[in-house]
Image 1 (cartoon, rainbow, N blue to C red):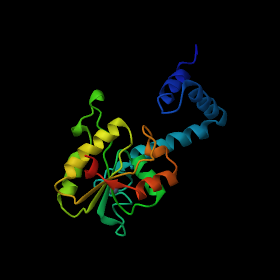
Image 2 (cartoon, helix red, strand yellow; image 1 turned 45 degrees about the horizontal axis):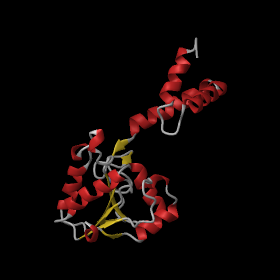
Image 3 (cartoon, protein in one colour; image 1 turned 90 degrees about the vertical axis):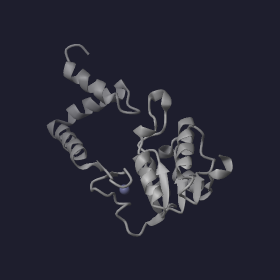
Length: 202
Ligand SMILES: [Zn+2]
């Protein structure tokens, strides 16, 4: 919009968020302007809080406000089972589904050679280190049911082959191409309950 470069810049920045187009971005800014200075300050404050306080858990790479996340710090969790997910949002989805009581490892993405994302770009070295301790009896590979997610799952399964007795994959029934984060809790619960051994199909 001519004559409003600061507003236009805000539209460009907000439009980068997933699911937000220029139209929604513009509505958000109009809304903030209508609500006034305090609403804008509140937004600045919460973003600063996220920037200053959120870190990566040193054990599993989940988002955390402490050096260990609330799951790694919980002595009631089953330390012999480990679930590998792509993103912190997938971990939250699994937690909401509520069946898994073990620990997690967040890869920070999925293998995608076309986008230049190879094994070194993911938290695979730290996963290998956790597996090599030899205390994990089951590794649940809960990467997304997409092509890249599948390729990542196979890579992880190979990594675990010599040091984990049981490697499982979430059951199908999950929509191919879907993302864990957007599945309803009961679908994810069923997928977890029906998880199958990985080695039969590799
Ligand atoms: Zn953690």
